[in-house]
Image 1 (tube, one colour):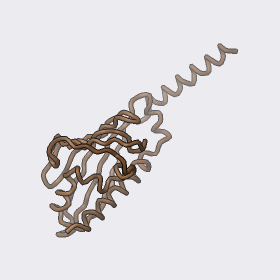
Image 2 (cartoon, rainbow, N blue to C red):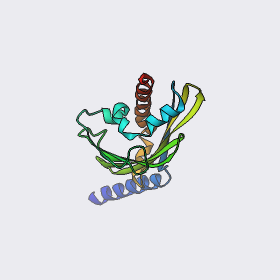
Image 3 (cartoon, rainbow, N blue to C red):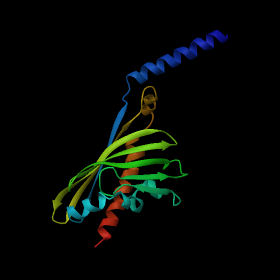
Image 4 (cartoon, helix red, strand yellow):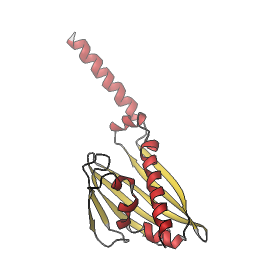
Length: 179
């Protein structure tokens, strides 16, 4: 009987591993919003990561989140480190990797706790009209094999996308309220 159970468990694990081998490992989340301010003003706000505690859904989850900064804000190499007891926020670092002046801020987000993984992406601005700026937020991440099997059951578009929408709405309110 124990041998039969063992065979069933091994077969089940083999099937799950085979499914994971053909399951996507990466995903991209994209959200956009229009902010009623000039492009330069919007870009100047976005490129400074020290503004993130004012609008980031994840940093606002826990008022006791510890935040530290390293480097020159608004320049490549600047790091916003965060540490929260809230598991949805967790512990990690958000680094500016590259800036295309007036256009795009590329970043790397390194989560350290409760899970370790890296995400990359960018925030870009596009002038729609004199006082209207389109902001695009892009987030790229994934799961390594065989953990990517979990992506079959997790709607990352909804899980991360909803928080990203709230973050962009918070950003819009902050920028539009500024002079």
